[in-house]
Image 1 (cartoon, helix red, strand yellow):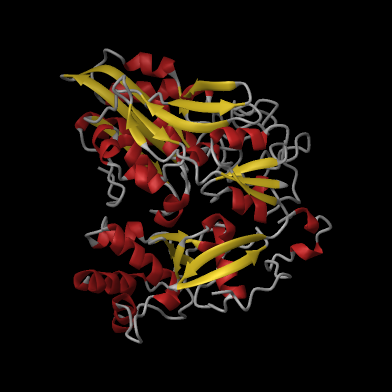
Image 2: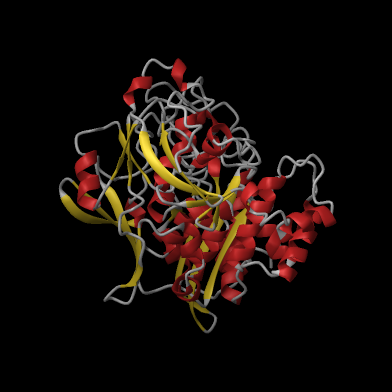
Length: 338
Length: 179
């Protein structure tokens, strides 16, 4: 780990001020991913600005009937927050599916959005990686790519975004509130993370020097018909091979509104309005769910070791839609898949 | 009290002293309460809580397994919450209360979890045990796990390569019954 200057931010404006004009400065909150990457010399900040004392730790109701989650709310506090468990259970479930309780006790809401891929080549500084060293090449293409993306890839990068929480935030159509040198703005969740294209070093559309202050949830939480299902190599504490978040609004047996997204398959949570439109007004049955998967995965492409993910993602999505429609969401402690 | 062992030349075992850019960071004063004793320290900001307790304070009960947040051997309680001490810098915790495995026993009497781990033979090599016990103390304080299934899920951040999981769950259930 290289040496760095350590400073504490006194308020959000101070954090923005300290970040301004210093491209080698980084904010630190939970630190669970950043410190790991610093130990590996993947992240090389010369200054760390500790934001853990900023007043961004509240979960508040918004005038519009939603919730505003402060960027420093811990993942574990959010997962067990009464309002989240009751009104947005798909978010609570997704958070509980990720990491371990020790890490959730440390990790912040904003930091979860900003965590980097766990692609082994991104971590290995002796190997080419366009995300870590732009222009050096992608070692995963033609390498060990079992964990890698099947959707939205480019010739420059096939890494996946590792978050579970973000898959749920995608279907809830959360808004990310940020503050920066040019003031405040909010970013709709679908536009927050990027596909790799030819700039895989940029994970998000945050501008230089911007800080996440809150994540806002709209009122609709799909509390009746939802599920989050994560398929992985062991039953707990492993990153997803594929995962699915689903929220349905049913009228009798008919799908009035459907939201669904996949995790572990792309550089961002994979959601597609075309796939959701294809099932709107349709009966909530196996044929409809298969159609949803067909449309969502229509451009899926496997690499040498991960072609199995295409079928796995299809089955995972169909199962998660079925669980949501039946009102029998996946439990994150019982590992039986209903 | 002042920390008599504070060594201004201390650097983490990653040996950053070998790096040319070592002078970029200044040392930071921080005060932490560890197992009930206040320590006023001056630290290289790179020092994790794990390296602090092991290398500065000779509290070697907390174990370094992976040093990457993947094994749970370094679990300690910070202000009562279990965390992996390898992934957090000590200077970020000014004023915090840290409890390591050495701080669980009270007045020479074993903590109920320590006794339960002995009663159930919940270890073989013992390397993961301090982390398992600190994690279980955090788990019990959280109050979210009631069933064996829930204990297994919420203890999944603590890896035991000897495979003593069955006995670890039994030990935690015994301690839960007493707390």
